[in-house]
Image (cartoon, rainbow, N blue to C red; front, side, top):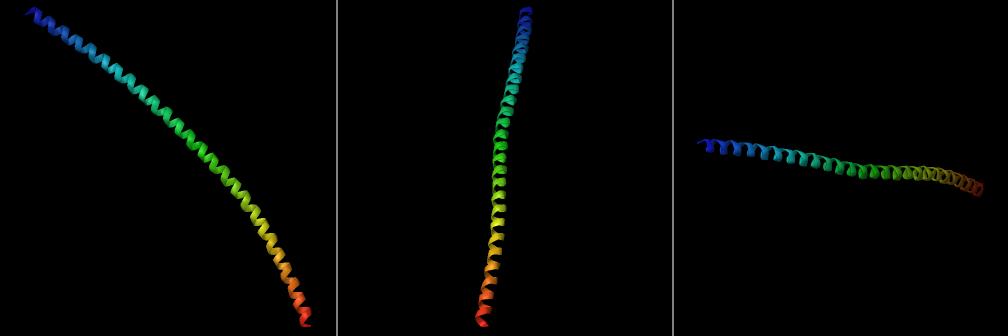
Length: 96
């Protein structure tokens, strides 16, 4: 009977040791997984940040281009007004 109790205690102790080691292994694995996920998120955020920066640069270039076109349109409108005035004066001279 003493042998049975000793074997039972030995098996229980062995079970505790194995349980503790499995717990440590899973905890370490969890920490590694969390670290890997954080690293992946940082990389993805970096890609997103670069994409946003590129979009902002493109937006500024389009804004400059739009301002240039606005200035050119204004000059063309002024030129068209002057041409209409000249045509009006030519027509008025022709009618007279």
